[in-house]
Image (tube, rainbow, N blue to C red; front, side, top):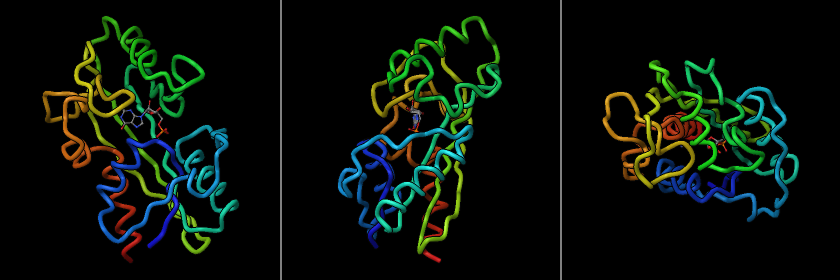
Length: 190
Ligand code: IMP
């Protein structure tokens, strides 16, 4: 089954491919000729996932899905949340985002956080949403160099290492995106 995944992020693509398994041909934005940045103007993850999926559907008419993810930190009232990519700067500066998060949580005892992924799927013109959540804590320093984004700071509940210290398989098995994609697969198989 051919389906457009609204991303050009190579990390995300390989994570989602691994969870989807055989039988799905994932096509990226670049491969369908969408080279512009899709504006993420929503106030919530749900809105942004929907905006991106609809944009792709309107441009291509193909079945597609888009995800939006945020890191929600309890002591920061859910920030950076929908602004996770642009927390410290206008761009996707992962190192600056991590430095800012550590600064904001300096001396804060409550380090609880969760990653939440929302996926909007448009199949045959009909839109559906699924979500995946992983709970954990924010470490006091960065560890590991796997993955991307906030991975070096996020220790999932029940583990003693960050996402960036795990293999892709270990992360996928418990991650927000892994769980959201597992829900997506359930819909696709119906
Ligand atoms: P996006 O909506 O999936 O592009 O995610 C927004 C931002 O959340 C990214 O720029 C990353 O900073 C962060 N993020 C998303 N997924 C992950 C992940 O799996 N690990 C760490 N950070 C992530």
